[in-house]
Picture 1: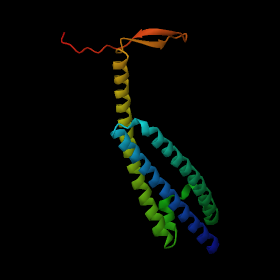
Picture 2 (picture 1 turned 90 degrees about the horizontal axis):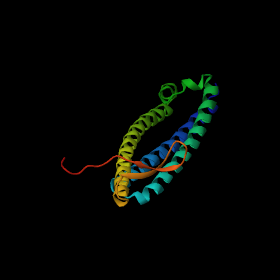
Picture 3 (picture 1 turned 60 degrees about the vertical axis):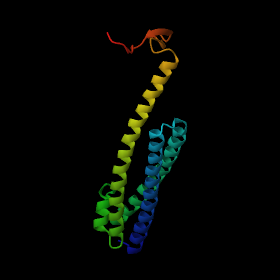
Picture 4 (picture 1 turned 90 degrees about the vertical axis):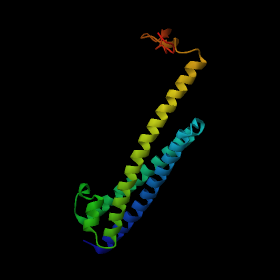
Amino acid sequence: MDDTRDVGHLEELAETLWQERHLTELLLYKLVCTRMLLAADEQRYTGICLNEVDSVLSRLRDAETHRDDVVQALAVTWGVSIDQLYLSTLADRSPEPWAAIFDDHRKAFLSLTSEIESVAVDNRRLASSGLHRVQQTMAALTGGSEHRLTYDPDGRRSSSAGPALVDQAL
């Protein structure tokens, strides 16, 4: 194994992981911004936020592709399968300071993933609640949901009786 190539791959991988980590933190930030807008019921800006989330996700996919290429090169240098090179095994197999760097990245990615999952759950809940409020408002503005235009199985528009809201004592 060529130590110069090995160190070069480790340096490139560490740099790639820093970039990917930065993008993951940016994704979390954009999701938190979206959550705040949803919680404040500012629907007019949520589309902008969601476009920004999509943009970060696209950049993150590109970074992941580059990381895969770098890990593949390292796997060839080490003579192992790419499937064996997790951050934990990189931390175990790499010399210092790389071992500590990869372990730090592993811990940071685990934490970020947990935070992103939590914010995503909140965002789905808030978006669903906002959609329900919009539907209620539209029903109130259009005279309720007693008769709605819909499509029948043949694709023709027809009037359909929707669920009724009873707000009086029976």
